[in-house]
Image 1 (cartoon, rainbow, N blue to C red):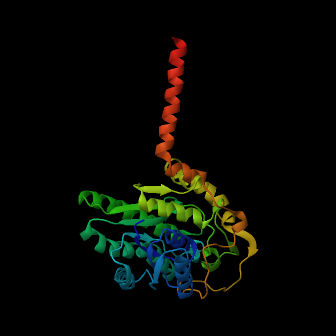
Image 2 (tube, rainbow, N blue to C red; image 1 turned 90 degrees about the vertical axis):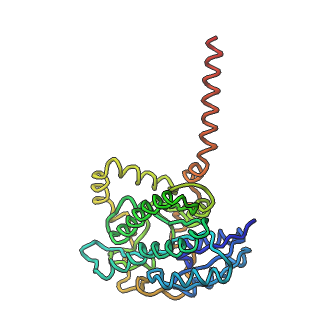
Image 3 (spheres, rainbow, N blue to C red; image 1 turned 60 degrees about the vertical axis):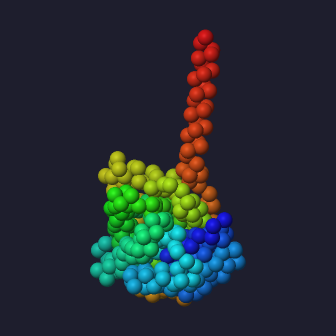
Length: 330
């Protein structure tokens, strides 16, 4: 197996941590990028225990120079980068009226400009070689904004628009560098305990909730297969497709149900630490506190990534039925 060189932003926890483990199982050599040193060191140990190699490339993706330095460090350690995964994000749970300009700017710089900085660092290396894969970790919220997450939804929408432009440019240039976007559903990650929240109750992902390993399977699969975008989980496809046809209904539904669906019955702790400006100490791992409510599988994802053989099988069945009918009629 080729030992691919991979860069993963947001690798210290959550979905990025699960992706690092999955590439580690494949023997990849990984540049682990995030701000939190404790989580990065733990991720490095896990990758090495699973059979891969890793370096800690501490960086704030909002800073272009730090992202570029992480890319240089990875190539100095392991050679040319084959796969770059833009996963880092930040968010604030609050109505728009309670957000500050500084908070919106910070979420945008991490969640959108972090993707731009990572993509530019990857392209700077991949375009001259005419090979490589860039995976953007998107979301259903890149297509449908929801209440209480306006800053994050706006940044994810920006990623989607940025991607559309880049897809077309790569086609124009006849480049063999490949770009793909993996749109995630609600995930059981630690972000709901470290995100800045101004809600009265503790934040939660909108059910149904999936484990980060489901996201990791999809992201790793997308890195090796030709797919412009990959939706993970039926709720993601339902949200994206439904919003194209009935956005007004989505507005009404989210306006009446979107607040309570993003909060548990537990009161929030006023002034608790958050990671918007600085990383929280400690290793937070891949999972959040919703293990009992999260699923490890997605039949929708399985069907999605196997759609070619499934369509072929369906065609064979249909052909057999028509043949039997024809023989019966004769």
